Structure formats: structure tokens, C-alpha cells
Length: 64
Image (tube, rainbow, N blue to C red):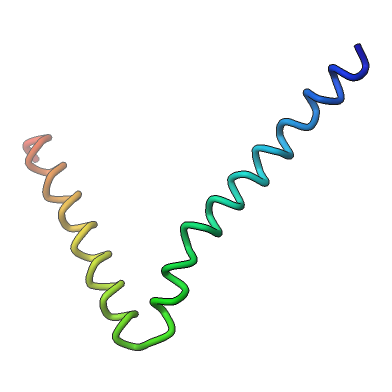
């Protein structure tokens, strides 16, 4: 029974290390993008476009 609880106690550590690995894998392309000034401009423009699109979509869906 002690072995069972040891395994259960390992799950949070496994979860956090998996999430950290996922974040690192997903941010690697953006690190390469930030090396140039034009890459930063493209990233900011894309971020503004996505946020604007979500804002306008929610505004029209909720009829605000």
C-alpha cells in the first residue's frame, strides 16, 4: 500500500514537468522569431490581429 501512495504522490510532479516541457516546446519557434526586429513586428501585428478578432467576435456574439 505504501508503494501506491508513493506513486500517487509522483503525479503532481509529473504533471508540472510535462506542462513545463510543453511550454518550452511551444515557445521555441517564438524565440527564433524574436531574434530579428522584423520578427518582433510580425509577432506584435499577429497578436493585435488575433486579439482584435476575438474581441470583435465576442462583441457581435453577445450583441454589445
